[in-house]
Length: 118
Ligand SMILES: CC(C)(COP(=O)(O)OP(=O)(O)OC[C@H]1O[C@@H](n2cnc3c(N)ncnc32)[C@H](O)[C@@H]1OP(=O)(O)O)[C@@H](O)C(=O)NCCC(=O)NCCS
Image (cartoon, rainbow, N blue to C red; front, side, top):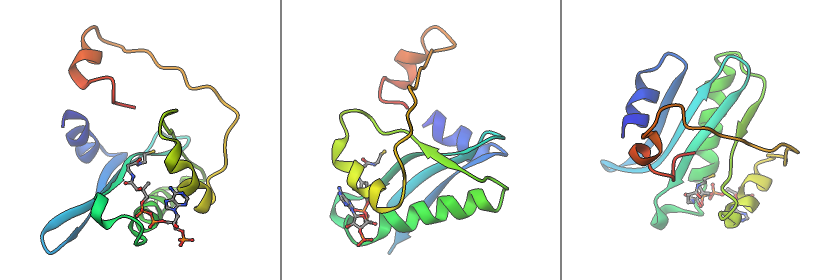
């Protein structure tokens, strides 16, 4: 929750949502680090998947970044989330030959945010 609030309140990031009849059915976090755009936590409600909402949310993220001058967008996919690879292929996202490394900056952050945070 802290991460979502920080992204929503920050000047270079936001959280986009799609609601229908008062229900939030798709979300994505998008941000710009001054060099590239990043998308995190794209999700469509299970019973609403495969109806174009994932593509719509990614297009909204891309448009948000274009309006802020970004020329490239990146995202990370967990190694155990292979089912989603076909989706990004379909949207034109190419595989980058990079290794992502991460380090927690404050003791306890790992426990605080949980290891699921990318
Ligand atoms: C990934 C996710 C957001 C896709 O959302 P969605 O609404 O089902 O996707 P869409 O209906 O917009 O699909 C867009 C296109 O990708 C294709 N596609 C969707 N999922 C696919 C898959 N797993 N493999 C191959 N193609 C896929 C669709 O057929 C569609 O093709 P088309 O536009 O040419 O007809 C959704 O499955 C999800 O929320 N997954 C769980 C959370 C998750 O893993 N998020 C990604 C974290 S990196």
